[in-house]
Length: 359
Image 1 (cartoon, rainbow, N blue to C red):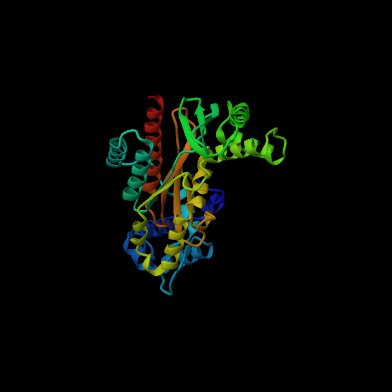
Image 2 (spheres, rainbow, N blue to C red; image 1 turned 120 degrees about the horizontal axis):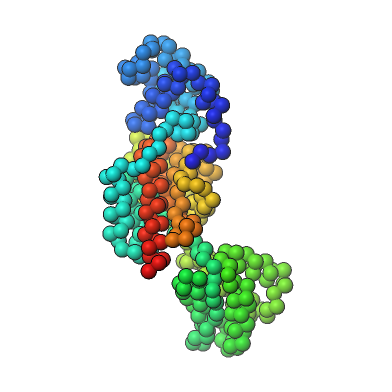
C-alpha cells in the first residue's frame, strides 16, 4: 500500500517521545479536523509538560511532518506526515462485521446486472466512507474468438465481436451507400486474422500501427471500416466511453475545512467532472497488489486539492483485473476504516461479477 516515497529512515530517527506525540497529533487531527495544541496533548495523558510537548512539536515541524496553518500553536500533519503515519503506525484490519454485512447485502440485492452492481458499489463507498465513491467500469480484456461485419440496410452495417467466454458485442456503423459486400468481408477477415486470441487492447494497438505505417493490404473503404469497428468496440466514440460512476460529491462539502478551502473544493469538483484523468489513475492500479493510497501531491491530478484517493482493483472469475473502485475525500479520511472497506468492496464486486460470468 505504500507509495514510492521511502520514509523508513525518517521513522527510525524518531525517539519514543516523538513517536507518541506525533501519533497522538495525527489521530486527534483525523478525528476532529482541527490543528492540535500542546494543551490538548497534555490533557490526553502524555506525561510531559506543555513546554516539553511544544519543543517536540517544533522538532517534528522542522523535519516536515507537522505544519502550523495559523499563527496559533496548533499543529496538523503534512501530507508527508500522513504518509508516515499510514505506513508506520496505522493498523489495518478487516472491516467491521456490520460494514461487511451491509456491503455484501447491498451489492447482492441489486441482482447480477453489472451496471447495477457497480452503481451500488459507488453508493456504498460514498455512504460508509464519507467521501465520494468512484467506480471505473470494466475494460474488455478477454481474448477475441470471432469478428465480422454484416450488411444491414443501406448505409449501415453491424460489426460483431465474440470473446472467448461467448459474450457478444454488437455495434452499428455507418458505411457509404453502395459499399460492396466484398469490402465488408475484406474488413472482417482482416480483423479476424489479427484479433483472434488477443485482447481488444493488444489487437487495436497492433492494427492501428499497421494501418498508419501503410503495411495493411486494405483499400481506403475497408481501412475506414476497421477503424470504426475498433473505435466502437474499444468505447472510443462519443457517448460510448468507459463509465466513471461517482456518488457522494456533496460529502466533500461536509468536511470542517471545506468552508476555508473552497478553491481546493472547486478544483476537486472540476477533477471529478474531467473523468478521463481519474479513469487513468484508477487504471494505474491494475498492476498493484491490493489497495493503493494517494495522499495530496502524491497524485498528479490533485496536488493542490488537499485530497486523498484510496483505490483497489476488482477482478473477474479468472482473476484478471478488469476495473477499479475507491474513495476520494479530504486528507483527514478515517484511513483505518476506509482502506479495508475499499478492499472488501472490491473483493465482493469481483465475486459477484465472477458468478455472473459463469452463468
